[in-house]
Image 1 (cartoon, rainbow, N blue to C red):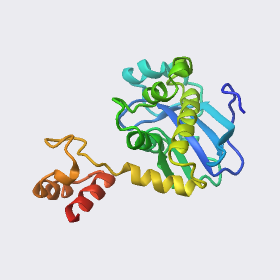
Image 2 (tube, rainbow, N blue to C red; image 1 turned 180 degrees about the vertical axis):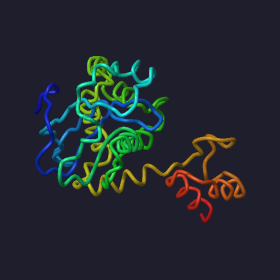
Image 3 (cartoon, rainbow, N blue to C red; image 1 turned 90 degrees about the vertical axis):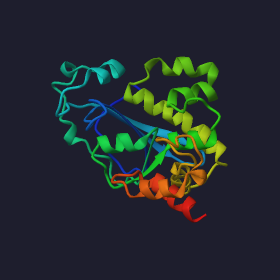
Image 4 (cartoon, rainbow, N blue to C red; image 1 turned 120 degrees about the vertical axis):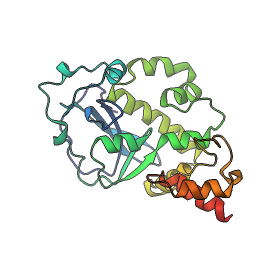
Length: 235
């Protein structure tokens, strides 16, 4: 299908990509490694091309990030600047686990985002963890350990996301277009329980109206949480 060791500059017309990045850290992340998989599908899903490349960030790599992906500042000193990265022409959909983070790291391009983490929470709510690694242990227990040995390498993580995506599409009933998958992803992002605060874990429908109104007035509220709060306020 493709070689995980392959790399090179992106090119050609593509429509949907799985994207993964390794970055300098959580705050204002700069990518130090970027990988994407070019997809065909979603029906009869296949991946036909991989891009993987390291980049020089505009800030030091934090120790926490370094301990996760094992990329040091001196490893990327001679790489191209992260600001030179561009998606291939024609990309409409970016797919990934917590895709908003990777999307932000590459400069928030104008694309639609499909989040496999949101799908994981929606489709397998009984799981005690919804990280990509945990989902592979849930769905592919006999092979997950082997697949995850290279985790936190962007190319390996991208291909593991591809493996998870196969299960997600099957659970969704094999939607035939990426636009349909995107619409389902948007719906899956809307939470049903409070994710934080004094009402954490409480069904949003049961959160007191005055607390909902207060939270909706806070700056920077997550738009998907706001949608849930407004919907439950009128239901």
